[in-house]
Length: 194
Image 1: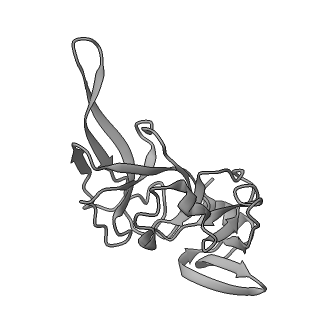
Image 2: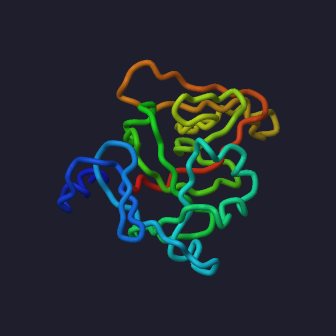
Image 3: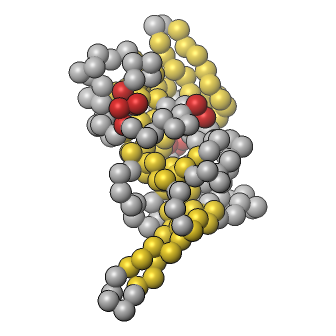
């Protein structure tokens, strides 16, 4: 079942996509099916044990170069609901747009794992490149990772290009093709959390 179906089964009505709970007050962000993330103020020892950072992608330009940036005291932290245990390298970020709506609804909040190496083909990734200028996510793109490799005479694989493919029911979304360097795979999707 989808996250939306699970939310509806729990009696959550359609409405705001995210209600952040903080000190008895609630603040609502974006529109869509409802769910709740609990905003917390962890001690340094509690970070990645009871919670993960909430990363606003539009203002995170360059923030993924060093994982220590995610430990910044100015970050917002949210508790997970138990599906995935918090761990270093995990964070929550919102995906805006329709290019991945078969897997990620517009406005959904997703749990991501920082990606230190090459992801598996078919993984949903958060990528960054100087040529990416998405109107919704800024310099980031969320797409399906599709590497294209050639095998030489010695049997060694060489990466020729990376195609980042949309997975949408809506027409008009084209794959992004990258040859040469400059593409950074920032993170891999763990799950849609709301």
